Image (cartoon, rainbow, N blue to C red; front, side, top):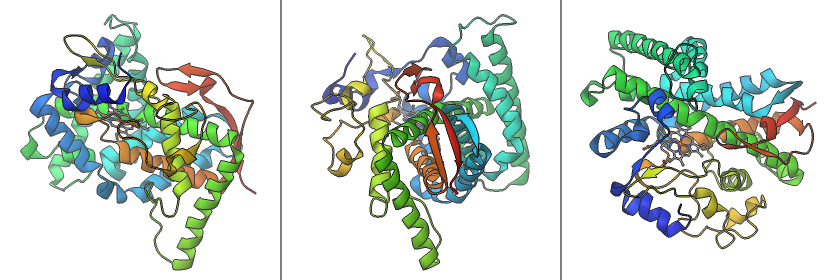
Length: 371
Ligand code: HEM
């Protein structure tokens, strides 16, 4: 296991060609062996190019208002309820992932895709035994159903000759020559990469803000100022997580949560000797971040030391979805803080792993519209 910024850089960036990402066998079978995570060399470079093209900061600007509709609907459906934050944020992250993959067509396929994907998910950490009745077997069957739905969407799209700018459109471009199976493996892979990660971070943000009311208050004021500025200028409001001029604290809250929660504790790499770069150790080393267990967004007021803040990894396999993740977090936070109040059911100190670290029981909260 390696936990220093320099050694991690050696494995993930400088000598990345000597190391191959690996995953548990059931996950590899479930996601599909041609998915981006397991690939190397030219095929990997091509997949990264196709993924990045659809979710660059430029490209996702066009879907901010659609993400907002999803965030507004999500929060509205929670009003007045006792909820499990993590479960609700999983639904939010799933819907945003589908939006990035299928554009606004996603609403048409959402329920079918959800039904089968949720069965697959139960099989991710199951024993890879393909016998009737096992979780693994059910998940493999659901996987076939999902591939069938994607094949249908592909054939409808190919019939229209329209240009699609979403992720599926990027994968299906003829000159890239991906097979339907390769496309399905990578779509399922992106949903997997996008969902529990973003939902876990959102859940930690709810917790840290509830525990730090003065920070919550200051974030709310920052977000209200954005609404006010929009009303005064009459200009379109475009939320941008990197807008450190107008929302310095909100951006820092997102960064600080990525650091403290370090939900991807590590990443697997296989070499002559297997190694496990430990992100959490880097983020929780007092030499890099004094009093590392403390939630303190102000630590991001000054630039951090190089290679010490890598919540999205580093090098050739680093997270291509990081801009989308930060955008959807910000959009939800904007609508949450400006329109709702919420409280935790009881002080929450436990952590559970599923496999990402999460507040105990997914953070039960009570949430309602501000009066
Ligand atoms: C807060 C949320 C997220 C976190 C913390 C996160 C973190 C990471 C990390 C650390 C890696 C690198 C793993 C490694 O080196 O083995 C990664 C890879 C990846 N992520 Fe994310 N991610 C998040 C959200 C997303 C979203 C929203 C998407 C897609 C829209 C996404 C798509 C991917 C993909 C496709 C890879 C594989 C890249 C490759 O192998 O080249 N992630 N993510």
